[in-house]
Length: 626
Image (cartoon, rainbow, N blue to C red; front, side, top):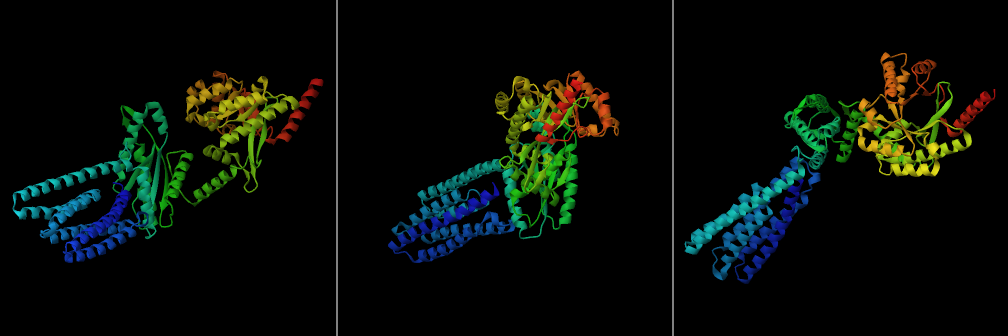
């Protein structure tokens, strides 16, 4: 049974038992007064009042969330003693009055003793150690009394008492077994048998409260299996479940006796150590433990003839008397785990002050980002895309954010946060609409471009309303010819999401005439199969490869490979991040036709870029005139 529920239930029984004893006892004393046999009863009821006050004190004393494990055990032992005493008083009144045949008082106490036995088996069934001896304490005097009468009916009554005792114990046993099963299911994971999130939080609550009163230390480890979704999607959920079961078995075999283990959802496991006397011991144990558990989980799994290899990203958080809230601990260890994933997976990150500061900065950015559009803090910049003659043929739309308090916030920071929080949907819609307005204006008033690139988020592609929204904007702002110049840039990270749904969405958008480009190509999930299945029109070479041209042969080979793949799949190529003439010439030599980078132009505000376009237009007119 869940520990908190068990003690809460036991606490409630104190109040019910006190109320039943005082009311029933008062009725019995009143009957004794009427029958003029009050003397032993009034002393007994006085004792019952004293014991009931003790029970009330025990009831008021208990607050599960605010006692440590040692205080809890002490309180429980006092409650057990209280139960023995209060039911013992009912046995005493039975013994005192069972021989008083006048006015049939013996029948009254026989009835109350049977009632007390029923009450005991009903109220105390959750605690087998308590209910069995108390029911025996109540029923045993009854059986002795019936046997002492030495009459045929009394022997029958004694046998009936034995049967009744058996029924009470059987009923309390079944009730106990049922509630144990219910609470086991409520606090354990059905697949692995480990504790679940609910129980883990309850346990951690108790530990944190205990730490407030002592100078102990512990650590929490959050484990997330890397690329588990891939196994689930490729081999099926049955294999995935068996893998989770094997992972949990490995963890249990290694540390079940020294740690509390829980599966808190999906492929996430949370482990909390037992107490340490010093932070040095705790830190040393955490370091050693995380390394060992990481190696254990990386060993090959053989499941239904499949040889599987996985790793784990882990976050660690130390707890002590300064740790305040359970939900904050859970959040911080989760942050550390995601940082481990961001660093390349298969590693461990400790939550520390630097990471906490980073999180606080992100929260500050998140809070202010909610109001950025309303405050007109979001602006768009444009970076030229040129051909081999360095003529402007297009541009990429780049989002910028300047906040009054934070100053200029890098897109690398706020776009990632917008993705996590879902703000990217509103932000993305704004960017697309403003870009379409700009393209329409330029086409009608400034000059004609060949292409106009806009970055699109994975979250936008997964949004059910995306296709309808883009359709509406196209109909409102762009002609058919203008739409064919629009290129939506997507990143390779989307390939880790719902691939089939994304492909379907892209195909729907392409019906409008819009093209798609794979941005940062070569840094993520690239593969021939994805290139074959993705309905894209362009590859954009990541700037990291371009920047290292002349320094790394491997990067040069990667760029050559990308050009080869582009030819095979009939895709155009854009090289971004071009900053030197040597890089430019190398790319031209390898038949690249579209370029972007500081060598040609930096990202500019709309007005500045329009001046650049007009200069380009004027230069071309002069050339044509000559």
